[in-house]
Length: 482
Ligand SMILES: *Cc1c(COP(=O)(O)O)cnc(C)c1O
Image (cartoon, rainbow, N blue to C red):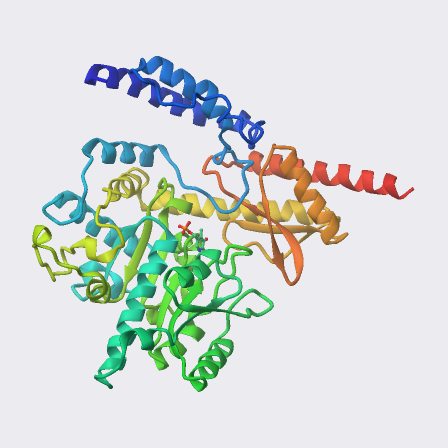
């Protein structure tokens, strides 16, 4: 493929993408395909010779794209939003165009420095305490990683290393392996499955502590767990607090957990993968009260801030905690740099190589401006409130708990069995997509406002789909009974 063909294919692809977003509202959310639909249509071997880009593009349009789920349809309400925007797509294109690997400063000076700048910009937009920012000239700083899982894993390993070194200061003969097996991590039973997985990856016992009736992990519960473990000769080491749980978007009170972590010298990581984006609007910051106790904070910019996967923004109070944990020098990487103003980001992450991810974050922040981003978040929160209002107008439904950020949880008054059937029917209709969660031992259907294209009419359309399915279900249930 030469540059002329690239121009042609590229322009056709851009047109395709623009059309895709123009028409996404008319598409069914879930594709009408069965498992194996694509495998059975594609050849078993890669083509021996080159194919013309037009044929390749035709295959994409006719065979592959029909099997995609419309994540950006306003009727897609599953999980949490997956960020995308034209600005971000262009940013990704430029990243791929430059094709840099920013493993050291010299490997791509722009890659390192734009990351520093954009992470300072974003950290300020979120209202993070100054000491987390690279521009504070202290040891804090931000880094872009691939996922919230990666971010908490990196922090867990740093916490482990830090805890061991602080214990060894008291006892020179401490055996590293033996000691580390005694370390314990804590989170709530409402935290994302990623947290539990982290414990497995990092070989640390992970206790899923009972949350209160509002899905929040409380200080007393954490203190009891610390005391219990200490009494058994174990060492509390790492806590993951969640701002915006995946099930019902509950917020752990950092102001309760933080002081206890401080008292026991335990690292507190804040997982704000989805809801963290809401803090760009000052009116939501009361939910992050206690942030000053955190050691690290992570938000998936690729969820609710219009940036495409993957872009997970992690800030740490002390970058040296990561550097000391991950610094492995080799001659070919010989540029020992302990100056955090221009960090050597390879010591802040698991892989060696790293993409120029900040370009898409930069493009989005420039094209939208802080006002544009805040407007996006506020309108999504308002659509969630509007949907809750519509649901409440129908006495067959209950909204429970109150909407939180862009998430509305609903259930049928008739109980779990009917709610479960309704959820199944909604997904089977392929017109919408939602998933369930449990709140106070009751099944709720999570309706997350996801698409950035959502309008008031779209919210009304989603509600019409839900209401109609409920009517059909309740009618057939009555006729079954008689
Ligand atoms: C989405 C989410 C995760 C998982 O994020 P990945 O980036 O896919 O690892 C973890 N925690 C919370 C609260 C989430 O919303």
